[in-house]
Image (cartoon, rainbow, N blue to C red; front, side, top):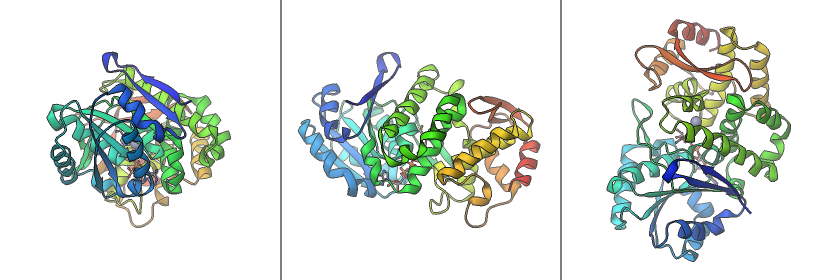
Length: 367
Ligand code: NAD
Ligand code: ZN
């Protein structure tokens, strides 16, 4: 039986189902919650090749008529051009507001399809079937959707919660190892934010999480509980939810500095380096002990993740240019830099008014 985690949002409360083999039950689970609806499945070519037939068969069993929109894989797909393609595909299939947009893919597909679901006919039903580890532990839960602008990541979007999230942990077996690792960075993030026991558990059990034993579903469920908690407390990120951005201010700057070129750096890798930098920066500011920073770096290194800027292949802009990317980030308000810093493993906090000069000298030292 799958693990069920509830995201408590009043009359918009929804379930996250987590378990191996769930894809076969997707049609039945969706039909039970949203009876009599038709669907547009948005997916990418990699996911379609590996799992689309199984999903289609499952939706058919549930009696759900389905149109499919298949897009190219990769971060560049989170664009206005592909948003238009999805919107057009949903309208061409003559779906009504009560019908469903299903995101079947990683975080790129989830963010893009969710945005389309949020704006077509002023908001259609939306179901997430995340297929990457990152999407299962993070992006499919919580209702943030959107696309990138040439001026930065995730700058255009809406909050639009799904009606259901179905995380089949078995589909992760076809995920390339590099992508699995990248998602693992977001998984470890929950331990580093405020669950020190979970981080310690991961230090002991990460091999089994990668191998796909019961520990995998256990870890994903714990991450979903952590995310669901934060989202239920602070749906629109006016407070606590910002903690989930641990590692992301540095990470987004590094992604922008590498032109979102996935061959150099994928999102989760940027987050891994960003988290290590956030811990190191906190230790430089005498907030956390250098031992904690070293412990985080050691774990990221052990699982094979990049953990310092020097791990990124190719040339990078200098510290000044990186800072410019950081000050462009939307988490900068009224000139003051907001960072997620930490007092130790599992003790992250939101720091407003971090002086840009401190960031700059830190980046110079750690470039
Ligand atoms: P992704 O969607 O590009 O997927 C990674 C790669 O894995 C792609 O090439 C994809 O085709 C492939 N893939 C996915 N599932 C597969 C499977 N089961 N088998 C084989 N290949 C598979 O990237 P991602 O890492 O899943 O997501 C990153 C995106 O998520 C970023 O754009 C980031 O901004 C966004 N994100 C959003 C939130 C949010 O709250 N909305 C949170 C975190 C990240
Ligand atoms: Zn992220």
